[in-house]
Length: 130
Length: 450
View 1 (spheres, each protein chain N blue to C red):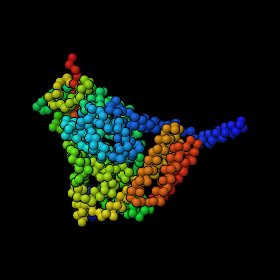
View 2 (cartoon, chains in turn brown, red):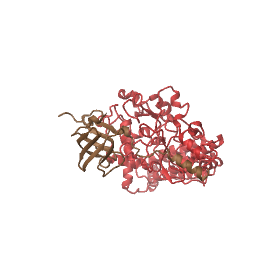
View 3 (cartoon, rainbow over the protein chains, first blue to last red):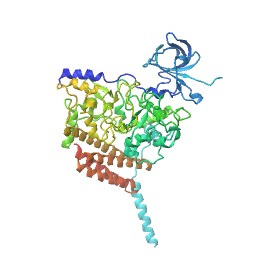
């Protein structure tokens, strides 16, 4: 294996090395808002939806740390957190994002300090009707 | 009669004195030790208000923190591992008891919980040894077979939360506070500390000065980037990759394991969907496991497809690997255009090397545990350490004998086991037998490596 072919191999093999975040999304769905280990309170935004823009697929959130604009992409997972009702959490859709709802948003990557961006997942709290 | 009774009394007091003189006062545990002890207790005893399973159900200390069909066969029918066999709420779509009992496979819903009947994968249980050396990568922590085993931040600390949701639930609704409770931050801290304390804390530095002819040749092939090529992805027989441009940490590769023909679980005719590995939908890559711990913790690969260490090495000589993306990259980098091409003797030699380094690690751990048992203040801790030494030593014997390796070392390991058993039984001479066991372990090690 000479240097050149080795480098070709290095490049080839490196392309196979999966990069990026490695959290397991499927069990995340069952974790109530604010309880995601290592994320909630550090790398997520928890607040109330102030406005929804269906055309842009964006959601404006008011959080204690300030306003945050979440972009919903085709990669974004939306889950309905019904744990306070002692009911199983469900998959949701953009239509479940309504003003006034409490949500937790995980931005793609770790964009601490940014004022918005694509969301990796959004949990929407579902409470009992008053 | 009084004289006889008095003599017996003196004898008893003297023996007790010998026993007591052998006991050293252990220093009070530091904060980290306390955290590890708390994590151990949680790992083995905490059910998180779920179906009765604990982390130790699938990662028992007495079986190298993993389970296989042979171990499973020793468990009673009401062991919580078999919860799908006696809990009606978990009878369907939670586990496949037949595949669990025959191949040690566990059901997981890594691509979602929306279609439990059809969307699942069957995976073996990876051991949790040497995690300090095998989880980190520049792209973040890699946990589980496909590197994405933990929710939240994907860290080892968060892993338990996902495991509780997947494996501990009372019903398939998986409602926190109803079907289980989620671990608290303090519990996650403790369980992470415990898991990180298990096994090797650092990688080997190869080559070792091995004494056996065949293992020595196996090590040379392992390290030869033109022949075995093993060290590219398993640097120092660990779980990190390095292709010459610096460490890539713990990485994922598509090595074609899913393309193996005649996979045992699929031969049963039961539905075993293809496992697409990392992420959802998956990219077909799987995580690199450490090899030092391999020889006594099979079956091998994420799907328990291969039972023996020789078979696991032979996999890399086969079509499934050499036609995979990882195999193709090796071919491209090879002046002869071959991926990995080994003959039978070379496969056995690499396996012999892996058997020997596994035994060396078992001996290292055994000596550490024997020394810890001598210093242990609590009899329970001493007993637990000695029990593990007995298991580790049995593994060492099995691993060497299985490869026809080092009968001289095996004889010393058998004596080490006997001495450890005596130490576990003895009230007054435990320290003496423990010391003998340490000497025998060291004598065995001297036959394996300089």
